[in-house]
Image 1 (cartoon, helix red, strand yellow):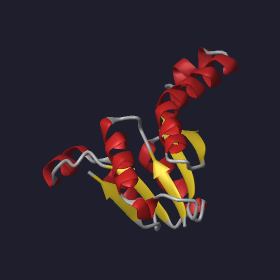
Image 2 (cartoon, one colour):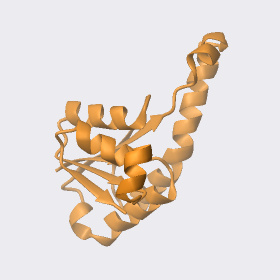
Image 3 (tube, helix red, strand yellow):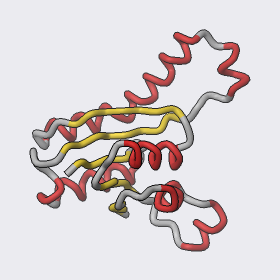
Length: 140
């Protein structure tokens, strides 16, 4: 199974990884894992005055802060994963990668806000569910 694992480095990512570790059916060599992180874009006016190498270094550093503990998790589980980061809004980025990558499953953590909070603020999970055709496993 080709599995996309969406992460943001939060406590909810840790819960999702703990869930995966506790359920053997989601781990193992029979699965192909890709870990995706959507790095927030630097505002265009600020990006325009920054050197491209500095901007690229910023994005690389932000992604590595999130990926480092997740790489450790996958190594401890004896699993290989591809780590990919894209610059942009999380929901749009995750949904686009899920659909373009021909994934069988998208796994992501959810903050678990109630319906009223989602109605007012929205959530990445809700937006991803609305934008992708790939089945989604939400872990709260």
